[in-house]
Length: 403
Image 1 (spheres, rainbow, N blue to C red):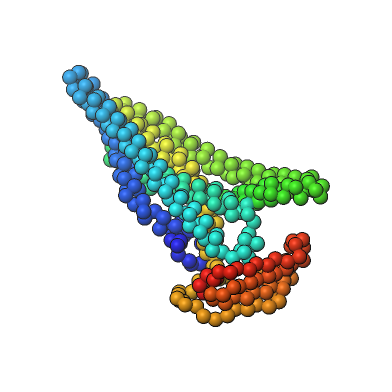
Image 2: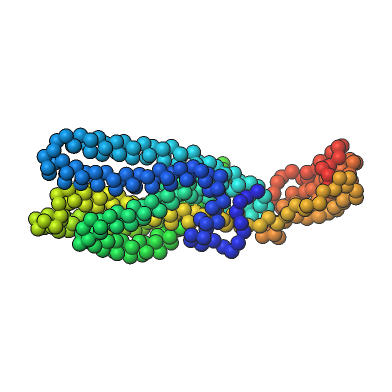
């Protein structure tokens, strides 16, 4: 059974929140990843502080003997940071692949439970894109984006606090640079979620046309409709390309501003820091440590655009997946088990059509005669235009399934 609770139509963060059950089996791996990432942030802060102690201590005092221990300490911290990155990535690979496998299994199981009327209304390409592209988007965000969204925010907050404590005028410059980033992020989120959903839906439409063209290639050729089908595919491809370019342009503008703002802040810090060292308000070691710590914030800030884009795609993908999980089957099995069924079922001259196309008969003149423990028969004729065979019939000398 699926771990998805059924509720109102999903939207935004709520869609991903409803998928949290898939993370529970991997709680230990996620904890190891989080601990390794947090420890890595601590080492990122510690190495510049060791550099500060090295410059302001032995180098300034010309005591060569103390340079080697501090240098080896900085080297050891760097090696430990690399080991933690390896551990995090090694654990991450197994956890996120297991998450995607479980979700795909539940999705396929759900599709098997849904009636033919559901598959009649849904395009095969839309289902295919949900089972591949959308699940991959959720996997990428769950294994990378979600963790680093928290870790990067933590790193920016802690490093800014350290910078304010080290030299508050420059710390205020770094803190002030965060204001336009927050404003840009809010605007980017609102626009990106719309274009992201359009791209994913159009990918499903294009996959549908490719699948239908491949399956029906003989019929298309026999009726001379190759140009018509090709034109439809080209139109869908051009529409997807145009929407994808809108998505790329939006992302490019956002990422450009995220790159420019930290670099401008670095220029201001270098200028004010040099003035502070000249007036004796900062030591050379403090300035080097300050610049190093500030540069360590460039990647967390610039990666914010990638992570937010990844998060928006994951939320859109989760909403599309939940559209399938939230569809209720028309036929639900009962809970009562009959050990020795009794009775007799007989259908005579019954027609069958799907609810969404009542005028299009799939079968007509269905005759069924079933009695437990006896020979049973059924026969039917296909609906108009369904098959060329005049009738289908079947006889079984064994008992039909119980119930």
